[in-house]
Length: 276
Image (cartoon, rainbow, N blue to C red; front, side, top):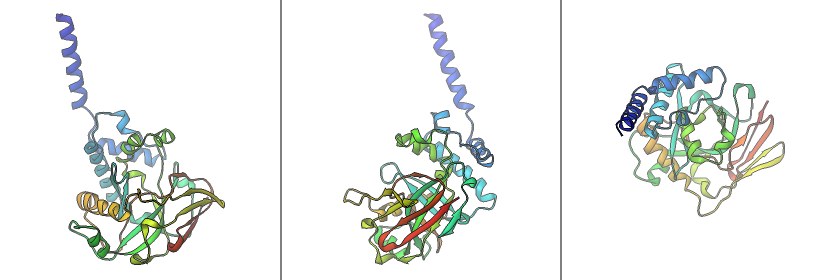
């Protein structure tokens, strides 16, 4: 009995020591940055250190973003993911906001992804919480077709696509894999019903994704409101005029392969680009 008790005491002590010596947010962010610099897959921190909470993972994201911004990146807007079930947010880099059409080199990514989104452009700054969607619509003046090209640099990304809780936790630390966003021509925000907008993504002329529009889908305006109130104003400095928010993909997550892409947004227009 005494030896058994001693075993459990030593085991408990070892667990406490491991917790106390776990890497801090800055160290973990440095690992992400090193992988990025070497064009290697990001380490899956949430699986390597399963005791990390969402708050811990967000602290790593803050340290990661601090380093990226210190190196010269600028904030061009914000993005959301997994809204409204398990929402997370990230920063869009101003340098990564490109005008479509464009030719994008694949070799600047480890594993490019293609996601059809809508960009909500702010024509007045937002520095305080917005009361409701009406207040949000007063600040958003233009909508743009937006193709996000994140870098799915995760070794087991395919497995994660069917395990959304794991994918979510894997994406938080490195700013939801943000790299580039291709923006199409703007239209006045009040002229398009974003919740009923048909969207079709094609690669080399073949349909690879279509938006399913039904009453059960989240209100995109509500999703943008979450990004403003719960991320941009909490983790960032709010929004400046000209910045954009993309609240989530509309036709699925598609692997980026070489060739011509066309995304048709109906009344919002079309966006063409080439991965080469």
